[in-house]
Image 1 (cartoon, rainbow, N blue to C red):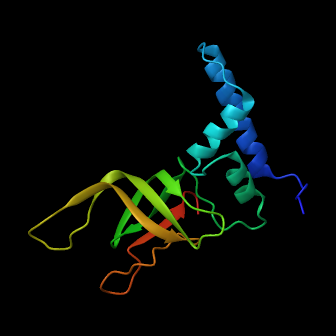
Image 2: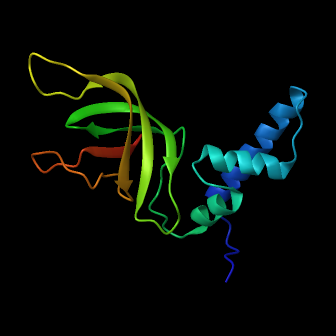
Amino acid sequence: MTDTQPNDRIAGYKTQAKRLRAQLADTGAPISHSQALEMIARQHGARDWNTLRAMAAVPGNARPLAVGDRVSGRYLGQPFTGYVHGLTHAPQAAYSRITLHFDDPVDVVSFDSFSSFRQRVSATIDADGRSPQKTSDGQPQLVVVPAGL
């Protein structure tokens, strides 16, 4: 059965596609609306427009993250802020692959006389933004929270 209820996320994606199409037309590189929708889908980590639309149409979709979103959280016990650089998932999958770019590099070593800083990391997360992999103290290696929460 097709969901015919209005959906703010889908409407937002379509608005983004219209803006992208207008900006490209202004620069002399016009594209079709369907091409703009496909580009927006890939920017949000989906394979294509149909996949993005299906994910957005699922009531209570627990995957609130999209490429470009501001996030905060903890990586290997260290607090961070940054943005989602990449995101890959299938609508039926339990986990997503996320790449984060931290505003400030994070020291991933807890040893006093040695440091190793990371500014971009990739990990697997569940729908709650927690990695299934744990540190030695039993905490998730990565916890991601959308900005403002």
